[in-house]
Amino acid sequence: MRHVLLMVLVLLIAVTASAQNRGLTATFTPASLNVNMLYTTSFDPFAPHNQPLLTTLEIRNTLNESYPVDLQVRVLWNGNTLVTAGFRTKDGMGIPANGSFYLSNRDLITNQSSTHFVKLDAAIDLQDIINASNLLKNAVLSGFFPDGTITIGIAVKRTGAPAWASETAFSITVQNIGNIYAVYPGSPMGGVPPMMSPTGYLWNALFTPFNTFNLMIKEFPPNNAPTASNIETSGTLLYGNPAPMTGNSFSDFLPYRDNHYYAWQVSSTLFTETNPLSGRSLGSAGVVKSNWYVFQYSASSDTDDRQNEFFTLLSLLNNPLILNLLNSGWRPTGTVIYNGRLETGPNALEMLNSLIGQAIEAEIVN
Image (cartoon, rainbow, N blue to C red):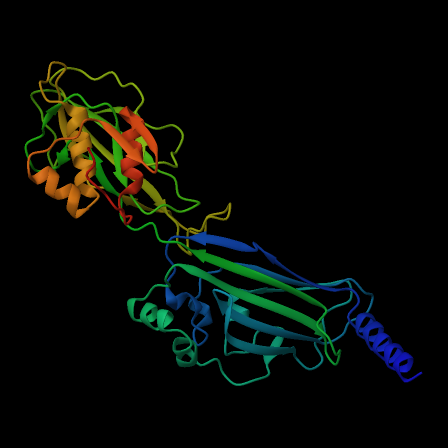
């Protein structure tokens, strides 16, 4: 009989909590952003007016009555809670009947009262947040968040209700793209452009799920080699990819002309809190670019360009055994065997390029 009474009591509490919170919802728009870099000052609770407007929280009341609301804000880094703050609607200011409150991140990451809410607990201490993670402590010193996800978790309820009515979250995923490095063909601007007939283009960068690459190739006449002073403003555009690429190579046919110079560069949009990947831009887009690489096309070049391409990529693997072989005069044959797979030609080059920056083992076999 006692167990039955306890079950009835629990059921009554649950029903009461549900009834008290009926008609109260919370929704973020947008619910998430992807960026390559995020300033730590973007979440300063002591100067919320300096924060970029990243998201909007709608707290909606679908009932025909007004009532006060409690709001809980949690800030998490990679799922670990850094700080929790509580807010309550100001005296005499409940959420309107069949109405909504709209709050931005400036109203949530703050030590100040907003238009609708007052803060219930102590001020958010940035030092406590910094000390919660050595990774974040180093990030604050550099001024940027490291790769990871920062989340603003929200819970709302009618004041006095025993349980939260609605919970939602807004997240920003930070994934750095770093720099873009041109690899092949050609050599960096400033030197003597090599004579060659390339079969494709290769570059290196940190890959993210949301960055794409744009390749630009310019043509210059034989009597007007590109220089640092004219490369941006002169030359004829040979190729500017109409559809951004997700990979780090390009091998389509191009109508090269003998003895002409060709300069190429790869770029990618740099997503920040003022220009996030969310379907809407909050500001002007930044761009990260590789350095310019230049070569002179020779249809009758005696240079084995494919072998040079292999040699360059093998050197970039930074494997001691491979470097010793190359330095001893050995040259690649154009065949790559990796984990039992045998590849030649462009597929072999692409495989080698994908291994750059990874820890690999090599062995000499007969």
